[in-house]
Amino acid sequence: MKGGAQPDDVRRALRAHGLDSCRAGDRVVVGSVEGSAARIDRLAAVGILPGVELSVQQTRPVVVVESGETVLALEREIAAGVQVVLAPAGLEKAAE
Image 1: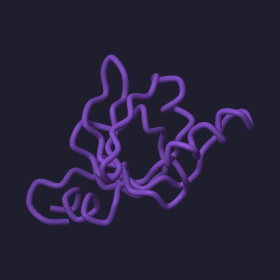
Image 2: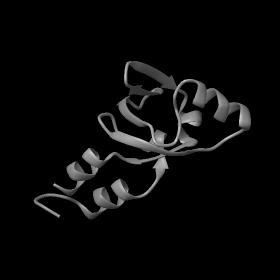
Image 3: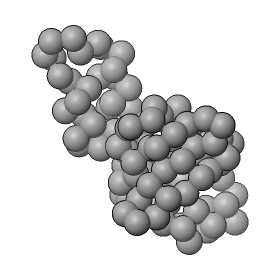
Image 4: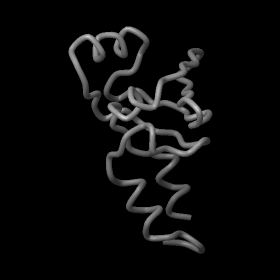
């Protein structure tokens, strides 16, 4: 770890967590999508799939993410079912 990296930041970067717990500015990679088959299908239809990189734009009152040219607003309950890890660039940032 360099400089002011906090152990909690590094742990957060390496473990999967719900998209609803991300911070604005985070770049994350979708690991899995949890929920009913219908919810998983709807999220897949708009591009929320394992392996996809998302940029978190805002987290309140809804979670807003960007993927390529697409910007999506997700209710917090739905975002909680999207498990993510920080993208490689985000991992480097957490370790600085």
